[in-house]
Image (cartoon, rainbow, N blue to C red; front, side, top):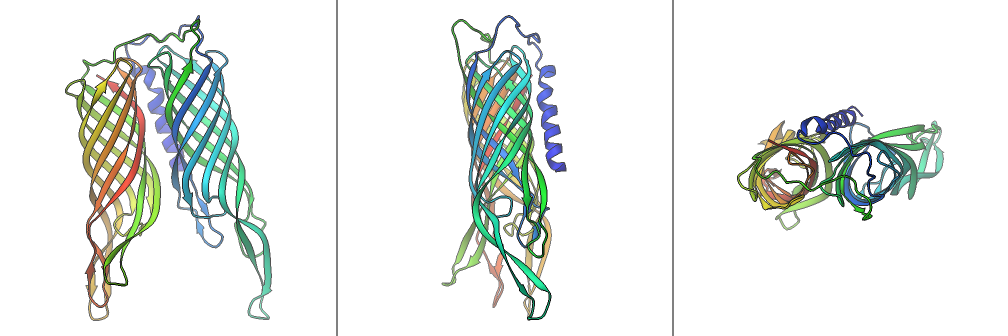
Length: 437
């Protein structure tokens, strides 16, 4: 919960600093002109899932994030108030728990209220709705019998996988950038509260469970298209993308789906890789870039992921993750937006990885320790930018982050066996704002 509050406060500070950093803009909205009424948008969304409730074990110190896609429909009643509906789908199928499992879908419906300036808008949102999980372990009955014949009575739950729906409430902030009359870039952040009801948390005995309200940090970023009436205008005029400004400084929210794997020895004696799916993590970062020309730039980006991986995540990753990438960006800038490709080598570092040092004969005593582990990485993908003014822009990144894990000891009976180097592929999405100087 504390991590979610910190992320929310930091992102709110970044977003609401835009009006003060966007020098050269007209801070007064054009009150005489109404915005276009209808908006239709698409976005990616990241939501924290957890803490987990297992039917037999308590994993309350662990959480994860899920990445999904969604659509949004909005209707602007006036410059300050709008109603909107949003639907999100998170395709990753999760392990069955008492409060999550299967795939996740979400629907929120509510209001957005705030102030619209010439090039950007700041709003607050309050949207009730629901979340639905496809496969939740649900208690459908119980079986009771005495322990060891004449001992105390023990009750075991009967669990089945079922779809379950829960009431949710999305409260937070919205920042919009208006590069043109027909397109806007939008960033949402806030607290999605899910009411789980009387979820049973103690499988043994007569405990009825507790009434639980879970707080989930959620971040969304995307673009929207306005249905323009020729007789209306939102006061957005054409402007230059600020090509003469060389230095860029940005802040972003990043989401990485980290590959979970392990190495072992197959029956034929060969080394085999065993995949266990993906574990998605959300983090914050900063970026510094220099534009050599309107088409070529060099940049450095750093991201920190505060959620803790298990110490035995994949034998070479554990603790908290830090990422640093540096490299070129190539593409083309238009008046209101730009398309680029990127190729940035770097490193991914884990604060508390489990490292095997060797085996001591004759009793095969394993020597190991926990320490920081750093691995080479390469980020390859695409970049989309929207220019709200000559100094301020919104940026969206999508790509494949490849991590190279070096060989490690995977077997030691009857002799020490060292595995092979492994390259894993991770989907990484980033969204944020940038400022030109």
